[in-house]
Image 1: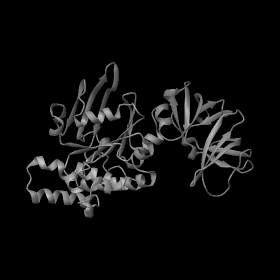
Image 2: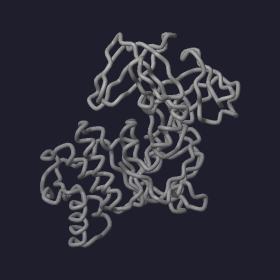
Image 3: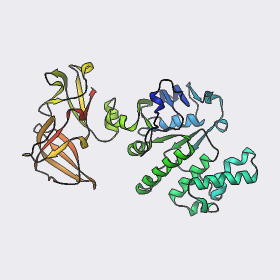
Image 4: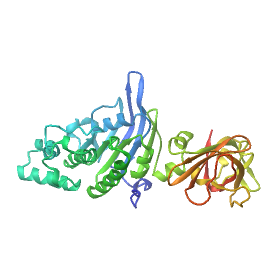
Amino acid sequence: MIPAPQDSPWADAAAVPQLRIRNVVKSFDSFAAVDDVSLDIFRGEFFSLLGASGCGKTTLLRMLAGFEFPDRGAVELDGIDLLKLQPYERPVNMMFQSYALFPHMSVAQNIGFGLRSEGLSRDHLEERVANALKLVQLSGFAQRKPNQLSGGQKQRVALARALVKRPKVLLLDEPLSALDKKLREATQFELINIQKQVGVTFIMVTHDQEEAMAMSTRIAVMDKGRVVQVGAPHEIYEYPHSRFVATFIGSINLFEGMAAHGPDGWRVDCAHWGGPLRVAQDLAALDHHQVALGVRPEKIRIAPPDEHLAADNFSDGVVREVAYLGESMLYRVALPSGFLVRVAAPNVGTRFSPGQTVRIGFDAGAGVALDK
């Protein structure tokens, strides 16, 4: 949905991050919730912290907001030490997972609540609230109470309340988790468009891989309190650095074998496949190491066994299971070794049934070798 900024500042060694997180550690008793995390986040990014429950992403977000303080480490925003500031002093605002709207207040009162301590005139306050309502397309809802709103409307009120104070950074804690699938997808577009309009840096916590992939300029994948990979969505998906990232983001086939070099270039000798798998990747650093060649299901083609399949690597197999996913078909194909390969194919043309013999194949550039 959202393309990375054209200048991709994280790729420019001379670019200055807006937010610097350096060697941050936070433990609860003997458990390290955040373990030596360092990140650079640039102005205008839609940055996501992605991971399973308990990986430390929410604890890190709460430290940015000032609701938790690290045991050690540094956090700077535009050169200012955030750790010396109380939560109410930080140019940061947070949108909570529960939205935390005041039930006895109107929509306008909820949005303007944080502005009342700034000493604004009544006219100026009302103007700021009106602009925030317009931004989230709720101009006609100012006098309604939260119990008169849908889930998506409550989400937008919470967003308007967070943005009305004009923070430098907006923190979003699982902002779409309370919405149903259809509304969640629509709201993703709304959030992206609003972020582009206001130009505020968004940092979102989510456990939903598709949500992070769809909305983010970059993603930090977290596991056991550590950041294990940072990159643009396509980098995380296409070039995972580890088996954890490869299996956590989407679905993937892992073909185990020994990396070796032959007359046709690099290969992975895979017993499950029944022979060598040609690889376009330079495996010099992994030569004669056990690796797993990761191949996404949609990069594997499927055809009748008597049909020529233009692929660098191919094998015959038998369809064991078929799942109809609407826009695509998911096949589990058993190779002669018994190894099951997941194959995703568009829901057009030939379909295959359980028990049918098929031919599957993929190109040398379709996989990424991961050190065991």
